[in-house]
Length: 361
Image (cartoon, rainbow, N blue to C red; front, side):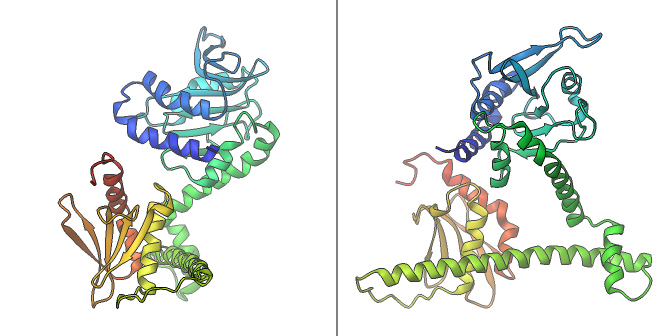
């Protein structure tokens, strides 16, 4: 099992166990120690991982940092832990700030076992920055974040390599947060920047209010169009691969019935797969077309219907099944609207994943 799979499994473990983890100490044992272990360090070897490292700091005598990861007897990474339900901010990282300039460690981590924030001294040498240069939620970690995290693995740790990319990571992280805010609630300056380029008159309060709504709508449409284009590109590649596979088969194909799978249904399938593949392998999500609807299943099992698409009549619907297998239809204007039901689709998936193995028998 490679590093990516190990980290994703740890994220799944956190999701399953967090309701049972009631204390900060339990958070350390259940979430944070396994995380350190996945970075390649022996948590039971004090030459590699020292819990409750003590360093006297001025008037502060006998203070302890939760964990220190060591190399050649010297700390290289300091870790301060909080309970998984506790929010993370610089106000509850005081020990990290104090320890950072008294040890040789150049990296520190503030974590609650779910969110991890990595700090260094980009602003002022030997003084820990107030803002992290790298952060992620382990239950929702992305592939590019895993690649950055891998740099801290014992087998790949290279101080200069991390420092060289830390600045870029920090500012990329900050810019993404700003873009997220602008995407949902565009600020006046952001709106004016674009309004001035398309509106010939003065930007009055009324015009600004109008363009705030237009900017928000345009941003959402732009992202939606970009996702659709990528999905179509992926569909084209998948169609070509399927065509090549079919052409390579020497056996004659049996005639099919009158069911015709449309391009729109396939686009809908790819959108559902895109939403769910963050939790399960894409190969487990399959489709079956029928006369009246297009079904999307887990593990090619018709007892595990994730949703049904009704796209070939006047109105379009996404149908989800409740616990009694009764359809709950949601009208959609286009397959792009499936993204609006991402949470419900993930809940549908989770319901099957939480069932015992013999529940579908």
